[in-house]
Length: 276
Image (cartoon, rainbow, N blue to C red):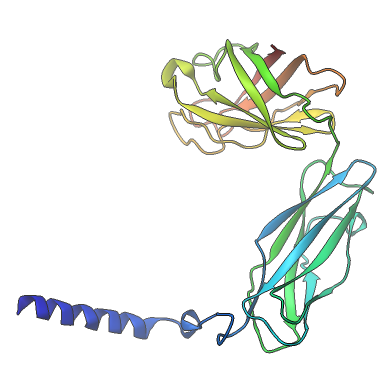
């Protein structure tokens, strides 16, 4: 009897919860009988523009249903965008999702009139659809930035890692170890290292950096060893090291250690990489 009462009570609870839900949550989006939902495929993408040259990226808009006729979707650039309009152009302010298809694309072309190496944004909105549809209000952000091509395999392979800056609570990374620098993108690199080996030896993480038009730049990165917040522990240097695409035998990488002053004042830390 007790079990029956519990089961009945559970149904009553779920019944009340169901009454409180927003009707939009209960809308069914399927490809046969459901309401059509139009949205961007993903919330962000990158548009890398080669220095003194061009670049492009395709932006996809998708539908939750198919249709027997073409559908036209209108898009616009949001005023919150920070990129200079002289550096990009949309192939069109509308795109077509062809009959029988779920997606359509527009292309954003970038040209290096004044593109910076640091990212600026092109924020896109979906304004209207030619058929009865629900529009997902989530915008799509395109990050546009300047890149300089580097030779394939540049600054990759095994390197002896040595800290050349003064120690702060011991070595910040795996000083004296041979690390493998791997290519994670055309201009992106990373290697596995420990953080503060005096305290947290044996715990490894991926330390990332980028080759940005003759400078080595470290983005915000998390640590695995801290007396405070582990997020965004490492960060960009005050002054970046430079590189020469003709020689990667000895490289230097500088970054900010404890950039948010969680355990002390931020420190500029430099490491030497010697190819093995």
